[in-house]
Length: 524
Image 1 (cartoon, rainbow, N blue to C red):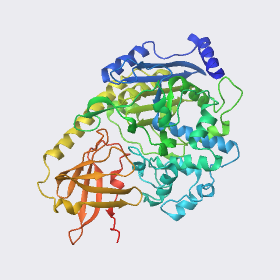
Image 2 (image 1 turned 180 degrees about the vertical axis):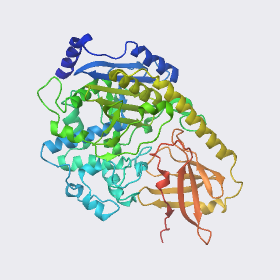
Image 3 (image 1 turned 60 degrees about the horizontal axis):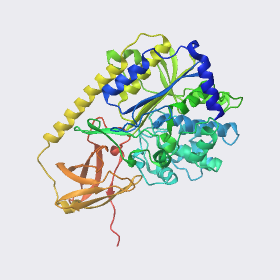
Image 4 (image 1 turned 135 degrees about the horizontal axis):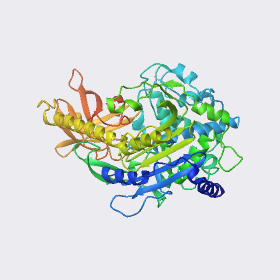
């Protein structure tokens, strides 16, 4: 607890000497939280080497009075990629690996689709989204949950076809961070979870933070995730807490499975801004050299043109580093990362030149609060005028969801009244995709049903849509439904099954479109 006491004392001494958040900031957070319906919000701000704010608003669970405090842990999603990168940096400092070591030299069983890529893939390549895999490829190996061990998940990468050539394009993925987590275990002899706990959480005195769903679920002071359903598509309708299947699967934890409190996050932010030096100590978590490596921008990201009201947020450049996005904002260098896990959103941002770090999280999917307040704080610390970003993001979100709901409703109301081509029993069978596994199509009364291996909640009845396309009805209503299309061969037998998400706003991790199921031959 020495680090925590030192930070609290230093923060108190700093007092008015710091720029501090806007005077009415705490009241504004509560107003937005209440107005937009987020159960809870937590924010941490460090500036000038001190903690300026670590606080919570609202409740950990809708319908209860349990308040969010500075020690309430929130799921932080992909902001945790920077922790996996830092774990590898520690191993580099220890002389056990180099960033440009070939992955296969440390993991002889590692395989990608292409043999040349397998031989050339480096540890650095695992972290920067230039592998050739498509956006979110393989995420269904852990979305919405999975019972596959990490090692088995990594093994299945060899069956995922690339979308582009190696190192030719940026496409965000999670599965290669799973590989990075497995590599940490192969090199250190400790699981990724043990390594993060021993080598990062313990030195930084992050006693409340957790590395697994099991630890998260056993923590009393935790912010339960929430989502909206019943409004025509996921994201609209009634706000309600998600069940225990809504947290990130253990196999994918290195891609974003940490849960962290605002209090603990201040230690991480200060260490990052200190270039690896542990605040209140002469010790280092990682060297200044590795800090520079992790912040070094490597892979350009495409920059979308934004609507006029968002033009000030449109960067001139944005590149991916080792677990961090690096971009410009109003002329300043911004190092940041967003995070999303079912029913929870987060963002971590650093302004190194201003010596400011910010963390915002909510236990629902109100991204207008996270992104809007982040820009408000960045504007404050950069001396820019107040721009009402949360309100602008709210209007944009409502319009986007309304358009998507109208599109989904139109598809449901106007299908071609043709099909199915076959008697339902002729669709029944087992169908396998090389990387995902085997699904089962079964009769369920007078209809069909679909069963998915390894994942809970995706199973459910199939409703005929049109032709030989059916719609899934997942037993968990926060899971994105999909269209399931059966293609027939010349003999009228099912030759293959493809899928795609029903909603145009479905999260990219529901990568149904990457699946290609073919019939499993019956055993003789």
